[in-house]
Length: 252
Image 1: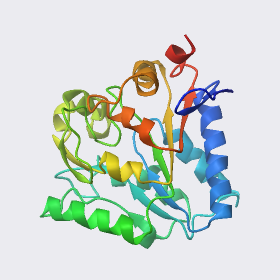
Image 2: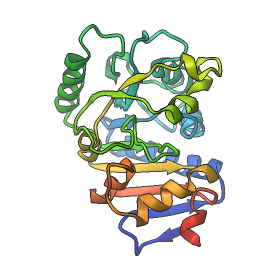
Image 3: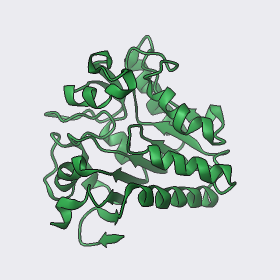
């Protein structure tokens, strides 16, 4: 594993996604031992699946205790219930919540089927504030540089908000909807970049060659709303955990 300390974002590379997930899971477990009431921000998507598998294994062995932890997920699709098979809430139940000892009342999620979506966004912000803020925010990154569902745009909305999804993002989520991009909702609710940047610590994980270009732009490019991940450069405590494929343009 290689550390590049001369960049504004701390970068650690791993030989593969399994090594990355095992190390991050061990670090989260250690964080829970140090602070059992840890507030975690969590992502969905393909990248964190192996991480959640490792966390579930640690919990099963008694090496990770989530009983007093609190979680907030980044985003959810608009127009579907939490029980919908394509919802991010269902995804989290399948991959993490149903496999660790998180108390149900400590799991916080956006409701994409809420009758008043603006009020729902305000409710979520208030719950994050009431929890004392997020201690550790785990992030993935889209191939277009989006974080959560903060899509590339002329300007970014600071706080939790409603967003129209790009066609590329909908294609990338088609697996949750029977492989058909047309079935993926056109809108979602997402934490805003300011909400994300208020976390005390941020860890972004990226794996695979398809992420290499946006990772390079995130680290070495200018701050721009056309690449929402670039705003991570503003945070004082961000770690990028990458496999070799995702880091290949940095090493060159």
